[in-house]
Image (tube, rainbow, N blue to C red; front, side, top):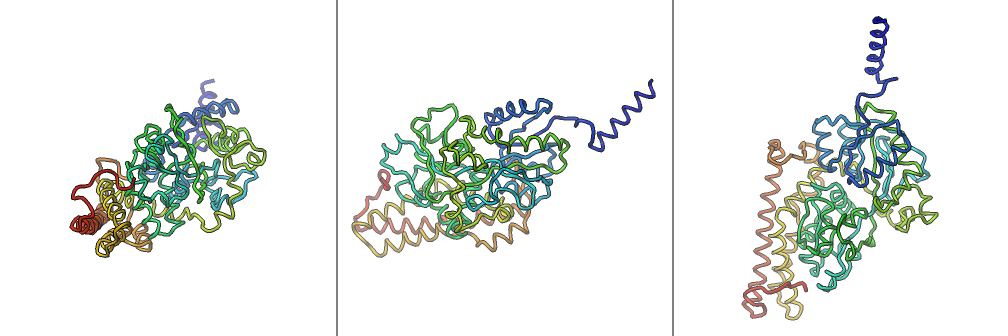
Length: 457
């Protein structure tokens, strides 16, 4: 009898090592950036469909999860479930994803100019998200602001000090929006827009949901966010509105099987559920509020959101390159923080001076002052290097997200210092030019020595 028990135990151990016939030693583990409210909806619904599978969700910000996985930290997980497509491309680039078979959902391979699934078969789209602006009606009435119709509208002087955004280094959703504008507008023009939007910022929030929360509380009037984060949780959403600008940006939220996953059958069962009709219908729950990838939900009127399947012609003017985005992922984060996030107050002050001089010049032109603010604007549209140099740096310098308090590599430290030094000189020159234009008008008696009020209003 003892020999029989020992034989069975040995057989079970062999099957466990081989990964067949015996349940894994831990639950199905899913790393996700989605909020707890959404996770709980899916946990309960999946449990009803597959009560035999114990699913465990590990909630991490996208940027933090990617940093852990690519940084060699073993999360001991089976699935990665998040919104930012470039995060999946980065994991694929680092060899951290396993093949995942596509499911038949009736969706085309490309939606609104964006591939729904990875052409190489390592991740699958399960929901669609649209980028837009969230604003506060009462705040807009008080400051006499209008709703921006295009992304570039947020560079207008009237929005100076009224805009909020989260940092792409701390928010995968914001990172994707930053990258999308760089690709659609081009490197130079895209960064010029972001730097001027940056000059209009009231704040850069620490988390994605901080944008809609700040708008709801009236800390600032308008923010750049994604549709499912437009309504702040546990706050009065009455004055908060959300709209899609004319240039609509839709991207898929996806799921991937991680390299080394041990719960293959449970993992595939969860993917099956996500892409099934019941799993897709769950996206329409007010507690989740996302857009399905199954076209049938738009055809039968189950959702009143814009139909992304009808936007293919509009989106055909440009195509998002997720591979290029993944390659320069951390470089974009560093550039945004060093050029926009960290010098926010200084840049806002320079732009305020520019706007003040330009308003004065509308009624009393002056060539010398006009040249000065034109030079300041030109300086604030510049970058420390072009796109080709950025590609070279991204491919030769190993850039990683460095946890606070820990040192970066020597090469990353040197590159960051290069960007910081360039930014300091650039802002100093831009300030000198703008102040020179203002001094000229002060000397002519067209502006007071001391500023008063918001010149953009």
